Amino acid sequence: MGTGSRRVDVCVVGLGPTGRALAHRSAQAGLRVAAVDPRPDRIWTPTYSAWLDELPSWLPPSVVASRIEAPTVWTTTERRIERPYVVLSKPRLFDALPLDDVHIEAQRATALTARRVTLADGTDIEADIVVDTRGLPKTDRRPAASAHGIFVEAHRVEHYVGAGEGLLLDWRPENGATNDEPPSFLYSVPIGDGTVIFEETTLGVPGGLTQHELRRRVVTRLAAHGISLTGDEPHESCHYPLDQPPPRRFRDKEAAVAFGSRGGMMHPCTGYSVADSLALTDTFVDALLSGTDPVAALWPAKARFVYWMRERGLAGMGRLTTEQATAMFDSFFRASPRQQRALLTEHADPVGLATVLVGTVAHTWPFRWRFDLVGWSNRNRWGKYTAQQQVYAPKH
Image (cartoon, one colour):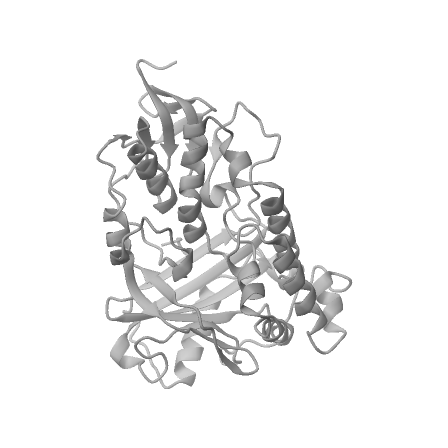
């Protein structure tokens, strides 16, 4: 034990949106809470988005910076998804999660166990439960989400993405990549601050793509729409694994409980995690208040089965060419709204998810491409391509 200690009910390590929400809601429920983060007052840097109906009711409407009533998906044709989609305001989300009743340690945690956190200054925090919300480990050769986004003033791009519009997935062949290179699509939404982000994204490719390659592709797309850049536009980048599993059912009882993206809430097929984590925060807190296992509450058998099936979908995506990925998404977005939600957002709808996965494979053409989707051929299509040494830009 260190030179001093503090006793609390809950100690949250990591104050990203997930950790801050868990600390906030735990304190509101009357629990004694400590939080550990080297920079607890830092506003987060990534852009966070969600389907509006995913957000918990306790969040105020002010956290929404931009709303798109029916985002667009481009595959072989244009489709509108009749489901409101929002971009979150990071400062307003931060302010909506005050930690006035939380003891904050602005330093690094050097060791975590189920009931103790050792801090860099040698002191300890003892807790009934320690929750690790520090985000994801290194990607290495794991199936990854890689993206490079450029923020452009809205008035310069209104002919491409206008006010109240958004491109959720744009698979049009405008990024300069060939079918012999790992596929990527464009994601573009108004941020709510007078800019629009244009983000070239790849999902599921082992090891991901470099920031240099993704930037080249997004610049090429913009040029195809008559938009030239000065080079001074702000940008953001991300690179993280998509296959971080939920805590084991019979986990090590001496280890801290992982929550958020570190605890299986990173969606394997989409790379989204914040909305699901926010929505499940009260499930975690309610389990603490009732004295039940929060992991069991968060991950019943149906939810674990859903995660397993999504991992199968991730593996299929990670071996497709651009043409195959376009055909696969074209098939998926012909499914019913319930089936789409089963894949995109529902935490525990295995019947809906199984239906849409089977339907997506069955309606992907040409027929032979289904063999790649299910792994009967080209199981490691991009392994050699991405095994070369790649240098990634800083995350943000």
